[in-house]
Length: 97
Image (cartoon, rainbow, N blue to C red; front, side, top):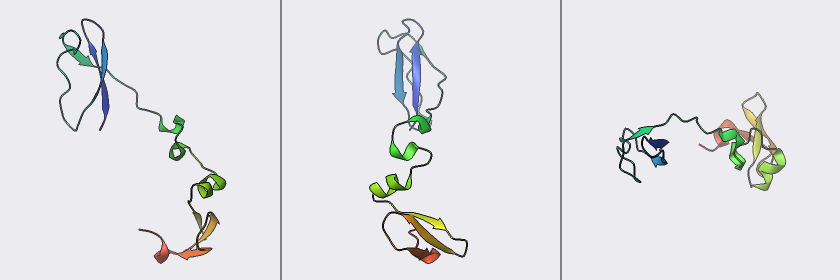
């Protein structure tokens, strides 16, 4: 669900609101009751967040330390393990769905 910012026309209070689908935003300021308008906001840059899965290229060591395995396509329909634990070679039929 997206977050939207609404600003009061009278007092300038900015309020962040979580909206579902096509739900309308608030009509009035929670502080003073005056009309509010939705602000234009820039989307979050997920690549700059500190979370592991938001980084561009985690290293093989980072993957292995989190219990994940990395497999590389060998070009013949099989995948060779590059890091982590698991079988050394896997066919397409052995990949998780």
